[in-house]
Amino acid sequence: MKQSTKIFLLLSIFLAISDIAFVRLNYLSSNSNPSIKGTSTYRIITKDGEERWIGSECNRIVSTQGEYLGLRGSSRDISEHVSLEKKSRESENLRAFGTMVGGVAHEFNNALQSLFLYAGLVKDQLPEEQAIRDDFEHLLDTANDAKQLVGQVMLISSLDSGHSEPLDLPILISDVLEQKVTAGLDVSRIEVAFVKNCPPVIGDKQQLRTVLINVIDNAILAIANGGELSVNLKCNEYASGKNIQSKRVRLTVTDTGVGMSEETLSQAFNPFFTTREVGQGKGFGLSIVYNILQNMGGSISATSAFGEGSSFIIEFPLGNIVEN
Image 1 (cartoon, one colour):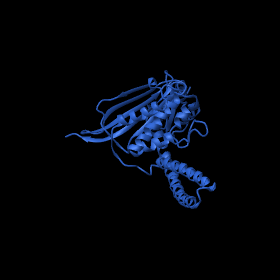
Image 2: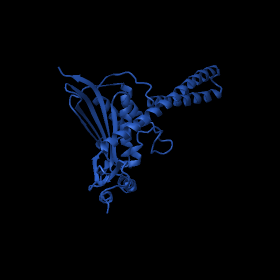
Image 3: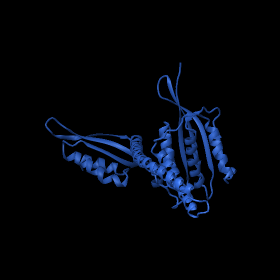
Image 4: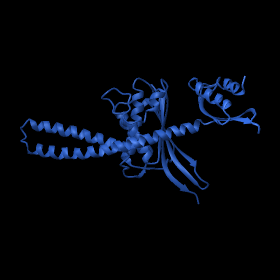
């Protein structure tokens, strides 16, 4: 049996089923043509059932006379690299989509301004007792709903960065949670843990409230049929240089609700994606959150498993501190 075939048979024990044919072709071709440099990127399944990405390189070893001597190869775990590439592609796609949608929203907003102007002028010229005046009231109300929708789309496109100022994140979070309790959320289902002396976050107050409301609302919806909500706030330091530390505040919102499938999780931050019934959600919430945080230099990620709940991890930048 040829050496490349032996290597492939040994490797195939750990390969993800969908990658076996591809890896087999690469390994066998490296043994049949001296000019081919066998490189493969494939997935393996560890003994714990975890899927990992592996990058392998295999070269033929031949003598100066061209006689085949064997194979020389190396493999390394590139799971982190693959994950970062995927996130980068998703981020680029979201930015491109946001730019396109933002341009459309801008033009739509201009059309709405004309509608407000002329509908308002006509309504004001109509006698109070005319029934058609009520129709214009409904028209203006609908136009106002459309204006708010455009505002959400503009946030997706990151065309408006808002007014940045130092903000007390624990107070903002407490205010949002208090509103939810007032609206009917059982306070016994909420667990809150805040770090002491949390430094202020720099950002637009209304946009940060939008971030908190959307993420917390998402968790509340997940526990509608039972479960608990956990809100945890920590201040972390990540060294980014010899004398510089990049400070960030990490907010983790966890629910023990229904959770998300892998497919749903992969689309959670996409514009217009929603798992809610028609009329209950437009799919803007988490996409707006993603763009607000990207715009202010923060980030958001999520982990979830169907039936096991979800966690949303948000990091807010605090700026750089240079040590004297």
